[in-house]
Length: 266
Image (cartoon, rainbow, N blue to C red):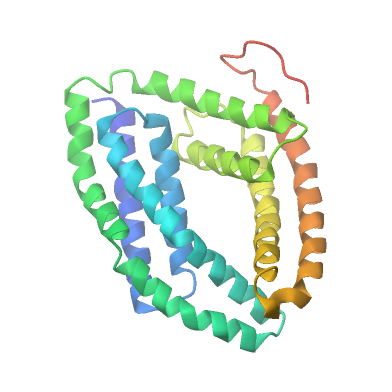
């Protein structure tokens, strides 16, 4: 059996354990990072599965992970906002929003989406092994090489677009970073490129938080006084991200694209 087939199974099993652990912590209320860790596990799982798309053994698990990601996004956004309000000493505003979190956690824990995810995780190894016995995974290594290279190319194309969308760049950065972690021997990214991905993701994360807070401030009266400072911080964070994107683009260009049809200029 090819080593890569076993390696994918091992990674999914490790992620399943980490997701169970995060769920248990969320249920017990032991710490404030349980939901965050659950979402990191989901992102890693989805990044592991994305290059394997097109197989029945992958599709159901990928859909289940995406559904839980969508369900938990607004709750995580609320968590981050509560932390920001507490840092600013706005404890009353923080407590009003924090009171909603226990209810939202319960909704996640008892959701059909989370139940479906763990059901899919339970059945996935057997489905994957059937696909291997059926000959579907014979060229898996070659497929990973090609798809991870194309994924890098999509990020490079997005960075080259002068009108690029920071939301799309953020998604592509995370996708490339976690795919490189999942498939280090198949990723075309150098260590320097992977480090650059991390710094861009951090800067875009800072921008995204403030962008979301500004949207909330336009709807929630008690946040209105914070809108202007958040806007200023968002502008600064986006500029920092743009500077780091230039470094990232340079690192991505250092490795020739395997399937490039023409050179790109940034």
